[in-house]
Length: 295
Image (cartoon, rainbow, N blue to C red; front, side, top):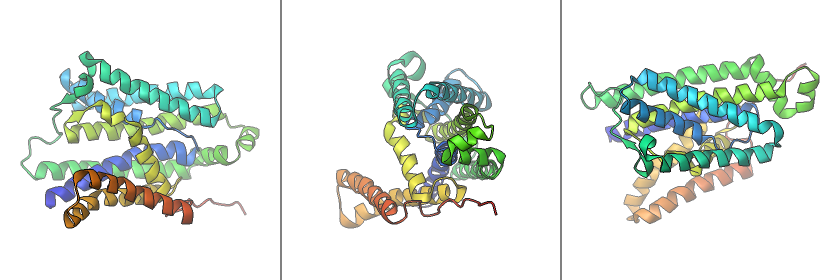
């Protein structure tokens, strides 16, 4: 049970990092990014490729951050001529193209088998202290990212993003460059999400194309929709609710003697039911964003 709880908290913390990255783009800036998981995939593959090349984890992390930020810059550039909904579809296409490349370029990514045997960051410690140390690292990074995202949201940049989201024409009249705001929001969210993917690859000791499935992006969207867009507390609440549903389904499976196929469907159905209930009765999420009004 101790190992199970440590693993659940660690994975929840990593998903929270990815959700914070999406919240910078979708929550504050109102950008419909349906290919967001591609940033996490780049971070995970950077960990794997860096390991194969004999790089240090710091160098691999730098590769992941730079590649994700470049991808974010590319996504922002293709959005300059597209409406918001078309841009969302384009980001989904970009993520699928990257997943296809990762699946077929075996010389670099290991193909469909991915890259395995990626060392954990605390292999020198004995069990269970290696897992505890990794959880501590994730918790520290998550606290730092949450603090930075909150500062961004409450600062001038965050207020400009909210104004762009709510009243883009007014933001333009006030002198804000919307293209610059969108680009900075996407790049910042990409870097945070890449960090989550990097930690996930080291924790699972694996990086593969299934990390970039579209369902993973929509899982992050579900966390934000349940918790509430545009605020850090909402992100954490959404991650806890979804992760709790994932954790408790195996216990329900054992109690009711359900098959693995049924338990998988039950997990998706339970999360879908929670999301549906939130959309019907709490459309702004369990922790709605509080907008400050000028007197």
